[in-house]
Image (cartoon, rainbow, N blue to C red):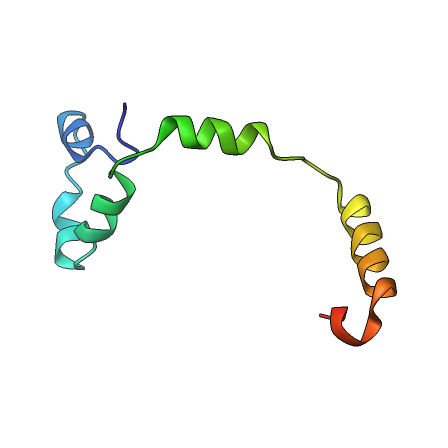
Length: 74
């Protein structure tokens, strides 16, 4: 799998920026980004997700608040 941030590829294309991030002690963050990805888990997760509009989200929020106004107001 391709790495989200590939410093070697950037360097090969004339953008040697690794030292800039190293000086700011950010390389650990990029290690996390470039760490293991559980492809099957991600596929299973997104299959079960619903994409909704802001209007649908507002309706759901209002319905939940109406069910129990004491406990459900953000």
